[in-house]
Length: 423
Image 1 (spheres, rainbow, N blue to C red):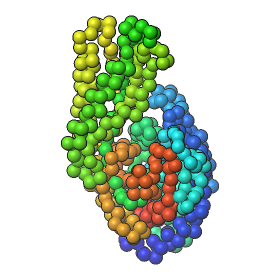
Image 2 (image 1 turned 90 degrees about the vertical axis):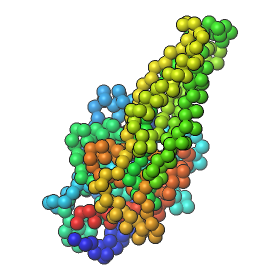
Image 3 (image 1 turned 45 degrees about the vertical axis):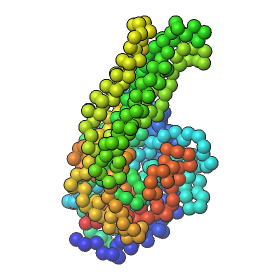
Image 4 (image 1 turned 45 degrees about the horizontal axis):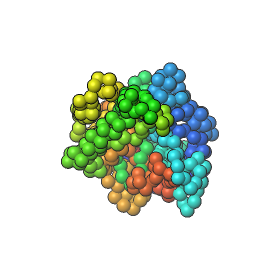
């Protein structure tokens, strides 16, 4: 059944009429911190539940058992699902956004949890990634509901809002947990993203924690110890050298270039006058869709082993360092499933009309929760409110911000897309 252009216009008008309310909804979400780590995110789920109830939505709460959460490295985690049936038959469409965020860090000129609005932008952690799409998806769904009740539009299928809280840790206790427990089984899904492209593929990510074990000693007599930091520097140099090789491996997916490696955290030692006995660093290896994850991990481990061997060469057993390697995350790349065509077509069609420019389908070097749906055979894409690039959004940097017109327009695109899919 073809949707009437008049119905699209009605959706747009409803969103415009309720946009101030949508902005306040987003501000309330931004103002509840969800720094991960430490990942005490159950309070935000409770606040979201309260806000949704005012719109007539009963959010089902799915708290992950405390022991699992602690073992995962978080403090508290409650996932939410809102289910909205429209009519018998049709598909179930899931809309997923994550509420957890990296800590604010330094350099902010606006409060990271203020939701301050200036020059048409809202500032705050998660304004662009991805509490914004809590509001995009909620108000798109509300617009479709309003259209159905006002014009008695015949719709079939279901929409589910999936609001989860562990994307920064890989999503295994968020979407992964909900899917594994069979609390949900959608036919299609859209995950939080940016407004100017629909993403159909993304990188994978391997994260490892490497601990270098030496022997602590007084700095006045360093030869009585084994300097773990010197060994770590040697290993790190070999790891970073891999990035030159990775640039020679290119992806065929538009928007994705080549693999790369980053070391994002280093800690160790006890004081400035002590030879460090232990140093730990965490590395992040982005994998292009064409790579095989277990081969990537084997290569990284071999690089570390070779670097360790060369550092220890010629030293007595007592003067050698050892290492422990722990896998933190293995997130597979997202690869397009053929069933995502209706999603891509609808978003491109409506995005072009609303934004006045083509909306390309492409890949992204990020990794997201969407892969967990795709691994279950659920076709998905990434699309939501946000700028053209991560850099422009200041995501994971100071002064993260969202252009509110992008929020308004993306909400219209999602609402129109839902209307198409529910016909």
